[in-house]
Length: 475
Image (cartoon, rainbow, N blue to C red; front, side):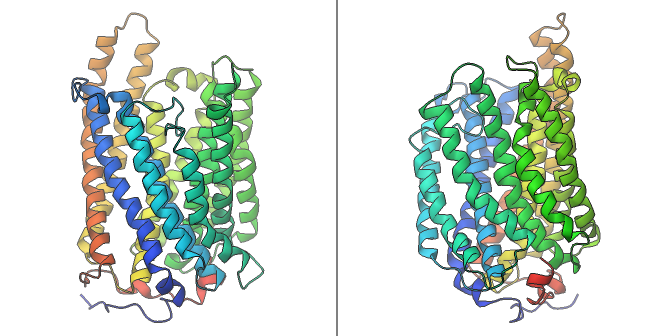
């Protein structure tokens, strides 16, 4: 096997990477730490699904609190830190100049993670809200808005001070996520926590918040990574680039309207769930353009290509399933079952996280100017994380299907329903253990690589083969 050089070629590692190395590695490292913490909490929550007596005497980890802790650590800890780190790196590179205001980003990162830690303590002690993806205590959320603004500042400066007048698809998505999340979080706080709306308006606002977190924040962050890294690992420009802008605006304007799918059969006007069907049909155009533009990834090579490929397929699959779930005939048997967590697993883990993994595997060698410490750990992480995601989704889907049938049959008791799901839930627990092991591999590999504790000859020779001249033309 040919020997891999320990350093990237000078044309690929730029002054932008060198100057922003510390703050961006801090963001990515914080995200990976929260990913492991979330994995431990996910394993605890998975065990409690089939063994309620597990940690029954621990008031801090009751099933409801464990699920809230897991969700918060995963979304606000892992996805937020990793997504912001990759977005800043992309905006800096495409801006053409070193990032400015990085001290603000460092301070914001520290306050953000301090706020998440304080929020988890609040959730564990019972000081939590009842809204999905907004379960942090009320006193933590203003701190998160301030910290997010500090982190996003270098990205906004890189975008506003960019050398080129034109913008690329990766910049559209990254900038949209930076601007929309603070507005989304403040609006949700206002109508759900500080001046809560009453009656049927409250579940409508909660459904809008859940769907907007996906379509206005997490999906744009992941798509920024996909549109930036894909041309590099595939060596080709996007074939239908002129349609990419329409795909972008379709996601932003139609995405949040799909929140009504969570309210099928609820005490809300019938037109609200119907709007979810209409908005979902509009989003099919967004997914179609992505398929046309990203079909080249199927033959791409490189360390992060496998993760991007899986994440892209999962993203399109989630979009199709989310659209189907908005139909009343399907929602009646799946809405309040484990099918919903299975869908979230496809979206948050299979799509968003896998794209972030691909971005991290591409960005870290360029930030550190060294290849990954262990190629074997990269391969192990890829195999384990794919196996864990597929296993978790299938187990939850099978259990949810059984649960839905049992709930619709008045002759089936709760004990019988639990026995029917037990095998599937045990498989889900095993899948969560596999995911935890996979992410521990990534964390160890990241720490070794970030601290320059060695290099590997197992990484592909083409790791730094794409010259920086393709930054604009292929992004």
